[in-house]
Structure formats: structure tokens, C-alpha cells
Image (cartoon, rainbow, N blue to C red; front, side, top):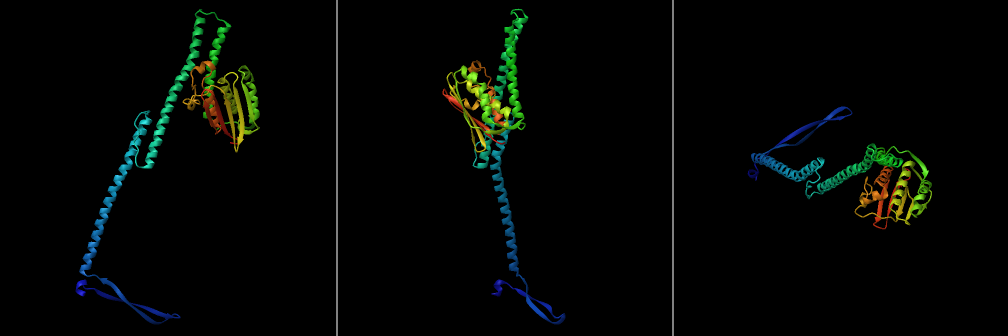
Length: 348
């Protein structure tokens, strides 16, 4: 048995510890125990082999982990690189490039979806800016052309200078002035949203006073107007809210036919006040309703001539609502009428 296991020699270690009693040494105690075991040659080879194998296993595991890490990093980085290239194209104004394909990784798919949405929104904004530039140019060019033609005719002596013709020139200049003033109003509201002169006022009383200004228009078109609601005190910019109400009522009057109905309701709900303007006008086509708050947008170009509008009133309304941290929605049934709903915080 000893030959199979190899020789194992054991060394005994002796340790002596003194014993004391009341400060005096009274004896010693001896401890003996087996010391370090001296391994046989066979044991030494076995331990050396174990160490070698552990090093090999560790090296293989390290190489395998690096391989797996590189594989996964490529799988993850490849779509991210595609997204990066896609965003580069977007930053250069190219919204037609193909978006990256979906992957098996949810987070990356969410990123791709968000970038696609961003690209779509930017493309829509670009279309709006292009249309806006065209509309502004058209709105300003038309009165300028009329004004220039009239002045040239009078300067050349083709037309006699009369008060009526001077009035036409004045009206065209006034039209341009009002147009630029409306644009400045939107820019001012959007640029200085935090600079609102807020006071506390009765919204119902304000709405009643503004409604009085429309009595002549209501009577002219035989429109039945109803103001419904109770006294609600609102902390807001009174001048801006007055403009908001005026624009909503003006819009309703423009597109409500003779003997139609307009209802203005005011109600409070929790910490909010809700304004609702309902009319029996022409209504808005479902494909157009999402754009009615854009500057200069009018769903029917013929409306500009018929109503004298410029497509700015609802843009101003939206800017005022946004400045007050509120919301505005529009619902319409084409050919039947529309409902505009404004929600404003009472005390913000």
C-alpha cells in the first residue's frame, strides 16, 4: 500500500508556551502537531499537471469569450452603424434614403423606429417650410402687383388720380401690413412663451364682451349664436386670450352659412377650463384637418377669395394655447360643421 501511494514523511512540530499565575511563571505546556506533508514525486507531477491543465482551460475560455464578445458586438454594432449612416443622410437633408431593417434586438428596433419617425417629421416640416415660403411670397406678391400696376397707371397718366384709386392702393398696403403683423404676432408668441402678462379675470365675462363685438356679423348672416357657461376665473394673459376667442369666433363666422348656428361653451373641470366652439359651417375634409393649424394653410384655396382670410388665425390660436401650456383639438364632419376645443390650466 505504501509503495502504491509513494512515501509520505510527516514532521512533528513542537510548540512550548509558558504558564503564569499572578505574574509568576509556574510551568510550561508543550503542543505537538503534524507539520507540512512532504509530497511524493508522483504527487508533485500530479499537481504540476493540474496547474498546466488549469492554465490551458483558462486560456481556451478566454479565447472563446473574446470570440463570442466579438461576434455579439458585430451583431449589435452593424445595425447601429446603419442607423448612424441613416442619421447622417437625414442631417444632410436627404429624407429619401432607405431606413435600416429591423433586427432581433428590441432596443435597436425601437431606435430605428424613432429615427424613422424623426425622418418623417423632418420631411413633413421641410414640405411645410417650402409651402410656407411659397404662400408668403404669393400673399405679398399679389397686393404688391396690384399696387404697382395702379401706381404705374396713374404715374403714366393712363388713369386719373382719384380718391377711389388711392383708396385701392391704401387697402393693398394695409393688407400687406396686416399680413406681416399676423406673422409677427405668431413669432412673438412662440419666441416669448414665458413672457406672458398673466392676471386673474372672469373668462365668461370676457367671452360675453367679445361676443358683443360680433353681433353685427351674426345679424348680417342671420346666425343664431349661443354663449353657454358659468363664471370661471382664469389666471392667464388676458389680451392673448381675447385674441384667441376673437380668432375662434371669427373663423366660425366666416365658414358658417346664413341662418346657421354657433355655440360657445365654457366649463371648468378639475384644474382646467375648457372652451368649445361649435358651428354648422362647411366642415373640414378628414385629410385636411391635421393641417388647419399650420400657417397660411386653408383646406380650400377658394376660401381665401371668398372669406378674405390668409390662413393665419388658427395658427395664432395654437401659438397662444401652447404659450399657456394648454391644448387645442379640432373635430369636423365634412359638410356638417366643426368643433374646436381649447383646454387651458386655470392657475398656471
